[in-house]
Image (cartoon, rainbow, N blue to C red):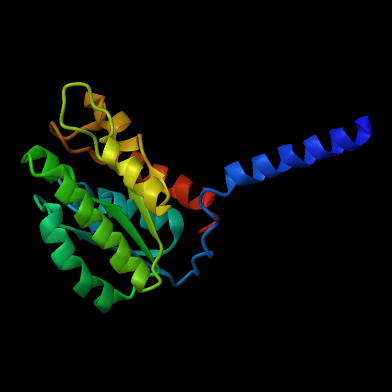
Length: 204
């Protein structure tokens, strides 16, 4: 009886471990000719550095996959949700990297609407069988921390997300080109964080 109980508890333990690791199932590996759409605002565009130092350019070198930089400085999510469909149709990407919402916070927009817009972007991609990953953007406060709604949205929609990277990067002046944008070092750190996320998902 004791042995049976021990086996039963061991099975439960194994199932719990597997369950904890199954939050985000591995993506289908991205083929060598895969196209990744990096969508967002100035953090995607690479404001403050030359184009070759933007995170999409660096990530392209790290992954060996083509990455389209679709960042528009100053854009709010309301404009982003209008812009995304044409880009999905034009490029038919194999992956969408979504980093958006910082300007909504800076301009004190309704964050409920911003979350709805982000959700719509994710749904657009998924309706075209395009997987999505995200990065959280920090609240524009003195001590930077990721806005809570990003992780809540990602958890609710089962979207892999890198929560802390941008906040951690922008905490240090040596990583910034101005008050809200990374420098070349900071953008490289963004790219490296996304590269690690893609590796953990078995996408590359």
